[in-house]
Image (cartoon, rainbow, N blue to C red):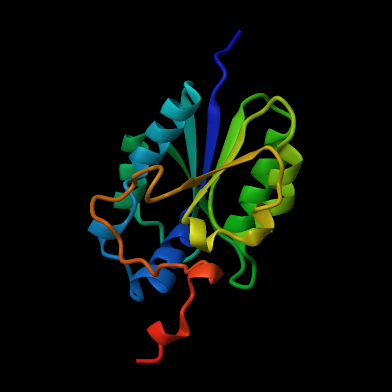
Length: 184
């Protein structure tokens, strides 16, 4: 019998867009991007079993071979995709993979903030399979919040996927909100 493993599905475009657009306010530099190997190590350690990573890439106009080689060296299986510009080809491939995993053994971790995956994640959760979502907590789609049986991990604080702290905006609980703090 084969050893149980965890499938880690990475929506790199989504993580990069959130990091650049919502946190840094600019395109991330290589040293500011997640250490992708830490995600596999975190999942393997957290769930005490091997983690197998699939990293989905939109390669319609360009396949970044140095990055692909780095992913291979880190233990990921790159999934280069191409398709029409008006289709979210990475999302489509991840959705199809989540649907296929429903028919296979193994636990599943999605690395994305994207609400497009909430229904497929919900279908995987709730049984004997462990299901997780890794993302920046404050940017993860609220569609995931009400899903029973899904574990949530913060990319920066739980996974510790970054070498340096990222600039963050503190989300203020309403009971602590004082308008005077903003009206100076």
